[in-house]
Length: 212
Image (spheres, rainbow, N blue to C red):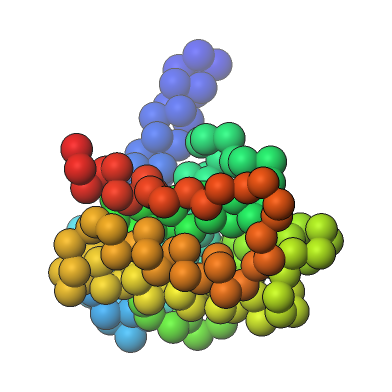
């Protein structure tokens, strides 16, 4: 009897998880298409094949559901920066970070649109955490005396520049190629002071991907 009860509970848990994934997938697509304004409980229920009480049971209100999707996308975005070892030099680490930012947007345009191309009603925990990681990377450059501006200004300029080129690329205004590397190097040169004996990197992950 106990085994049957355990099996039944496992089956219910798996069904619940599948329902949650289906709902989250629908919300992600709606967010990518039109931001939070495009998400309604009615539309989510229609596309996911569930009832409103099911959505509220799993996620609470609409804002909590939207926040959950945005946070999951931010966490996946941050994980992409951990899949390769970053350079020890903080400036070169920022340069590599620019490449990975752009590459992630090109490889995952739907996720990118969810987290960056539609203004959220409020910052989410993972979104704030992600930006703090960027700020910490810029702070490491300041700590070795190679940042030309303040940490806050440097982090914002880095993000706005990376976001701008990524948005243009994923929306088809320019095919991936040398443009991202040119923008990256102009940004790094303006933000940072050179270290003696260092050579600038002239290619990027995005450039390499475009050549394959």
